[in-house]
Image (tube, rainbow, N blue to C red):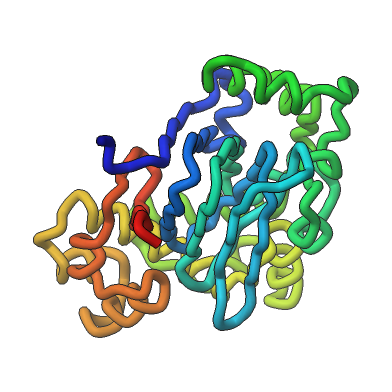
Length: 289
C-alpha cells in the first residue's frame, strides 16, 4: 500500500512572460476518506488555492494557523493563503481535488488592483480576482484529465488578465532583496528605504498593501526560506548556514527556526517527509482515528 495517500504534482509555467510572476502550479489529489495531515512553513509567496467539492475552515490568528478541509456542498471554493508567522497545519478529512497557483512575492498585483486585505477573508477569491468570461471555466478546468492541460488553461486565463504596469515600486524593493541575497549581503528596512528613496512609513504601507506583511516580517521570512533551502542541501553545515544568512549566532538561528517551524534545524531535517522542488512538508497519515 502506498504510504503517502496525498498525491502532489508541481508544474512550472511554460509561458516566458508568466514565469516572471508564477513560481509554479501545484495539484493535490486524495481519492479516499482516510484523514491526513501535513504542515508547511512560512514563505513569502502567495497561494491561490481552488477546491472542488470541499469545505474549508481556516483559523488564523496569533496562536493558531490551521486549515480543516472537509466534504462540501459548494461546487467550487477558493482562498488566498500566505505570509504566515508560524507553521501552517492542514487537516484533510475527505477526498481532495485542489489546484494552487503559487505567485512570486508581489506578483499578484500584476493581475488585480485589489489589496491583500480585500482578498484573504473570502472563500470565492478566484471569481473576485479574475471574473472569467466563460462562467463554466472552473468546471472545465477540473474536468481536464491531466495537470498539464489544467496548467495550460490557467496560463491562458492569467495572460488575459495580466497588466504588467501595475507592479512597480514593490518590484524594485524585491529586486534589491534578490541582489543582496545573490551577493550574500544583509539588507535592513533602513537600507531599503534609502535605495527606494522613501520613508519607513511609505515602505510599510507599500509592503502591507502589496504583500499583506510589514517589511520587517517579510525580511525575516525571506531569510528563513533561503536558510531552509540551504539547510536541506547541506544538513551537516549548521553553523555555516547560520552565518551565511546573517544570523547573529547559532542560538539566534535555532530560535528563528523554532518560531517558523516548531522544530530546531536538526529535528526539522528528521521530521520533513515530503520534499519536491519548492515543497518541504511534514506529512502524516492519520489512519486508525
